[in-house]
Length: 239
Image (cartoon, rainbow, N blue to C red):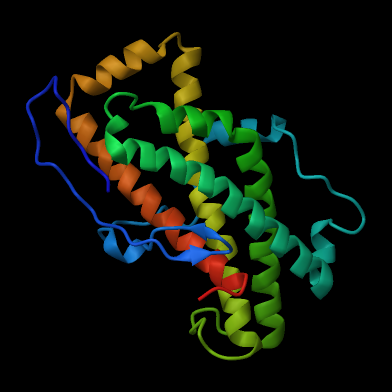
């Protein structure tokens, strides 16, 4: 359950959100349906010059067989999708552990834990985002080639439903990681300006409005990530 509380400021109503935990590939993930319906991250990140700095991060290894044009090959596309799906689930499991710690009462004790994790994970997120974007484009091309309406149901039997599912999975992963990347870059920007963790923590704890916003952001980000995890579970043959 996710809680918002602070002993140093005027108390705000405690938020309790019960979450069930289905299992995908041996890993338990809460379903997003129990979470409030909040806005998803934008389909594409707004122009942010800091995102250009991601180009300096270690890029995805690219060779003759994994370059984007080769994603037209079904075997290569399936392999890359499987690699991305497993990598994302491993990564989100680590994020989920941090969220569970915050939910257990540590959010106000260490409110910067997730932001630091985002900053530390920029390289890994950059690789997965690049892969997700390339695959997302490949599934758009495939849908056009097959005459598949990507707005249709992912539950439809056959190839059309599968293409829609994988398109929505890769788009979901890209959006999720783009927002978390911006959060990590925001944290690094503050540190480069000479604002240390103590100052960031003090600014947050002094403002009930900021605490509420951070809690809302945590809920929204977690909800979005768990929707991606559910799609990933389905792509791997889960329920």
